[in-house]
Structures are given as structure tokens and as C-alpha cells.
Image (cartoon, rainbow, N blue to C red):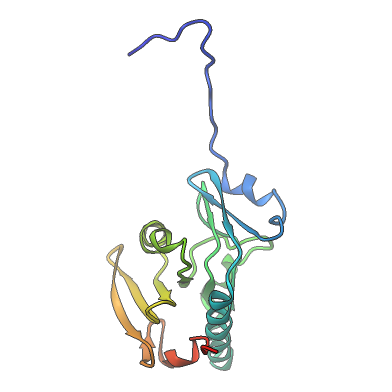
Length: 194
């Protein structure tokens, strides 16, 4: 191991905790902050296509969940996935028995469902990083929506690992866990081209 000379500074870095991150306050305008492995990560706000899909899916799920008294649907809220990880899934579902995890500033445990809508800059993050994080944290269901090929993929946690739970594209109608009775007409999610 090389020796440091007396003139070389010793730099100690400390990972930020989820609790420290939640004390920062609101995000600056146009920027979305998350805590990733103890470091603050910034990403741009959603584009119109992303926002359209988010609004349509959230409306569809919220209506169904409320009608059947299943729990609550949320969007873009700080969610603690570990001591050094705070993410903000696009759509979040907590079943009624797990609503105690909804804290005043953040969600204090893994949701029953996390949905991520892929943006041009987030493909690897959503398909690899968040996939692994949500899996390790015990999120029972993970859906990934890719607007470009107009595709939705669903995964279910079984034996601590995600397995495919369904997929569809374009105008398919899906029935996915945790809402197997709900028909999801994918055509309603895609923004009409003008």
C-alpha cells in the first residue's frame, strides 16, 4: 500500500443518510432529487409524454383502488428503500393493511407496487438500478413503462427475486398483479400524436 506524503490531504467522505436527505426540504424548480447510495442524484423534471402516461395510469389505478377500498395510490413521493436510499417512483401503491408506512414526509417502507416510466435518460436506471433496489427492498410488484415502443412490463417478487408477471404493448389490454381484476387498456396510456 502506497504511503501518503505529509503534503497530501486526507479526504474523508460521509454517506448521507435517508433521514438527513429528508431534512433538505423541497427540490429546486425543474430538478428532481433522490438519494442514491448516500449521494444526492439530480434528474430533470418529466417531459410531456412521461407526464401524460403518469396522469392517465394514476387516474385509472386510483379510481379502481378507491372503488374497491384497497388502499391508496400516490405519485412522485420520497420513499425510503434503505438507510442511504430515497427514491421517488412515478406511481406508488400501498395496500390498506400497509398504510401505516405512509409517514408525514416520506414513505417509511417498501410499497406494494412501484411504477417507473422510462425517460430518454433513465433506461438503465429504471431497468437495472431501480429494478435491483426495489427487488432487494421487498417491493412486491414493479411495473416498467417504456413510452417509445409503447410497452408495459410487470414483475412480481417471488423468493426474493423478480419474475415476469405480464407484459403488453400498443393496444393490448392487461390484467396484472396486484390488481388482477382490473383491465388496463394500454391504448389509454399513450399520448395521441398530433
